[in-house]
Image 1 (cartoon, rainbow over the protein chains, first blue to last red):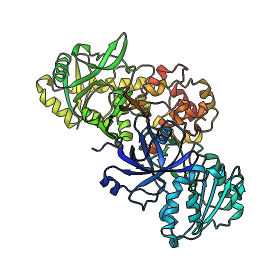
Image 2: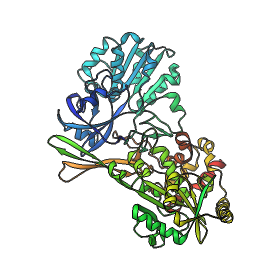
Image 3: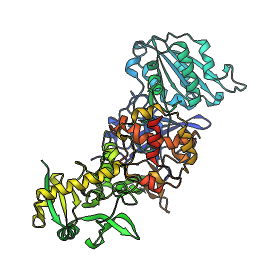
Image 4: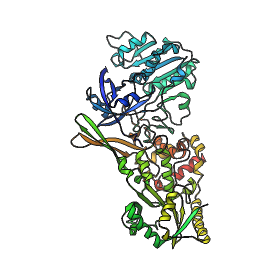
Amino acid sequence: MKNPYIPKLAIIRRIKDETPNTRTFRLSFKDPDLQRNFKFSPGQFIELTVFNYGEAPFSISSSPLEREYLETTIRVAGTVTKALFSLKENDVIGIRGPFGNSWPMGKLKGEDVLIIAGGIGLAPLRPVIKQILSDRDSYGEVILLYGARTPKDLLYKEELKEWEKQIDVHLIVDVGDETWKGRTGVVTALFDEISVDPKSTYSLQCGPPIMMHFVTKKLVELGFSGDRIVFSLERLMKCGMGFCGHCMISGRYVCRDGPVFNYSQISNFLEVAL
Amino acid sequence: MERVKKITKDNFYELVERLLANYQVIAPVNKDGRVFYEYISNSKEVDMEYKGHTLLPPKKFFFPEKEVLFTYEKLNGDIIIYDKVQEIKEGRRVFLGIRPCDIMALKSLDKVLISEFKDPYYQARRENTIIIGLTCNEPTKYCFCAFTKTGPSINEGYDLLLTDLGHSYIVSIGSEKGLTLVKLNLDLFEEPSEEELKERDEILKTVEKEILKQELPDLTNIYEAMLRNFNAEIWKEYGEKCLACGKCNYTCPTCRCFDIFDDPNLDFKSGKRVRVWDSCHFLSFTKVTSGEIFRKERPSRVKQRIYHKYCYSIYDEGSISCVGCGRCIDVCPAKIDIREVARKVVSL
């Protein structure tokens, strides 16, 4: 019987600063067989261990097609992330997973895709964008609306420029600075720059609950059906297997039945999910 | 057909001694007037005459309140992990005198912890433990198992199930493991008479009737009423009453929420990963690192436990996850009675 609580050892291969408080960690399993056999779908997450400090859930932010390593983009916030930020390249950490369901990648083919992200919420959507870019012609119009607190807080700054060549990218920040030429405001303001057909578009979003609340409202107004409004939810997740109970919303476990849900699903929840 | 035997009380205590030679034995033990399930070393410690339920449920013997999942050690830049499951697998235990409601609570935990994913610690303990249950001759004022369909008589979840006839026990055999145990100690068992079997059925029926004197709805079927009343005013009232102490969670035989953390040793080069019971009544239960708390208001936390028992479990596990043991009523410092809550919900 294999024990799903035992983390597999992995090595930090590269650390990249994304913003003043966010880094992307490139990881690969110590055991090359494990690395070769590690598969995940965009939207899934791992439980990452910093030994002596504990474990926390993070979405995988690299492409599922990349088999040499996986990446996770992390904002320093609590005990585990503070400890993780003190580690260096070649240090050893632990990984369990992948856990959870994934974005409905199969349904996106042949459709238009509207991706809406706030802050660190772009991390679980990066695998989606990378997978789309690897097979760009299979998808219709692809739009990214991305908002961050300040220009410095935008993730994947160089990649955004690359992505712009193949998909339609719109950025906004809450507070600009001297370098910022773009718009300021909340991410929903960007809706006036785009036109989408709700019948042929899937919307995928991840960001603070308040952002997803208002974006969802906007999408409903635009005529999106519930199954085409898709988001990734954040909850406290200790085990990843529907055991520990922390992530439960109305009888569903975000770690096991989610983190990806659509609006039709959460509309039937007794508790308010957003 | 039911496979059934009889054992006199004298022979039963002989059986316990024989079990003690081969197994670790858990049994009800009276301590200062309150009964607890405990490891015993002598058949004289067992209290088979206790009424109602033990103060604490049996879950800690399968899912301890604090448990080391693994230990780790940093060695020359590498990390070595020592899994604790193997040690559990080596154990052989008998759980004696456990009540039908508590047996059904273990069945309820099985549905969660041995499902799509398997909790290997829990599963190993379930597999290494023989269940010898004991039915009730008399309910307490807190008992309501007849309304949750988890007692006073049950037909699953045990290897052997005893019913006290005064001079001896009727022994219902519930599994091959139970049958083997009887066969290995055949000299201690007798064949029960038709009258004795009838007497057993009468005892269980009387207990059931006694419990059914309370006015309560069929709790296995209040799902619709729960759905209907999620935003009802009563939750505010209970939210104000509840002290959010978590006693109901800790004494509930089916509550199983837990936290996980690392406990480093003083050298900081080694340590253990630990899990401990948690409570959905605590404010910290839904707090994420960004600071967001998803169940901030107390009514939402009172609701979480009760909805999990009577509503969400039906969706997720196929049946309610309350077994009617009444412990949460017994221990609640705010005197919240889950039966009263159910009555109100159904009446609205």
